[in-house]
Image (tube, rainbow, N blue to C red; front, side):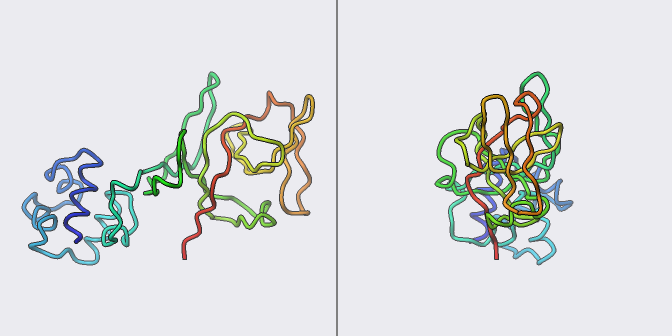
Length: 193
């Protein structure tokens, strides 16, 4: 079962067995044995395989077809130059069911701090964001202020964006649209147990 999953993951990345073996620090023959299930990888090797492919250990042994998944970046830092967004720091790629995303470009951010606890968003949560330049009043969005992405409820007045936290300890942020750029709408808080 894991051999088929390893083949699927390798093909998604477009790598040869030799390339994967080099990344793992093993011979091509050893890696080939894993894919053909002639040899079972040790737990440490399974961790290495998960790291190389950017998936969780459980994903290597799951029955879910990899083709039903897409890899989306988990972004640590975002910058905006010339009006275009750049993912400055991609921490890893997260396998994501295609049914979660629909159309458009998506990425993940980690929630920082406790300003959105009223919306059940906690520090460290993995947030699925759909990249889009506008949101409806009251929707939760990732907003770029400088090089920092913050998550807030967005309200638009005539000449001001009001960024509202979901924690009474944090006052609203008022800023002209030129100083804050909406980068995407919160689609999902991915909670793993």
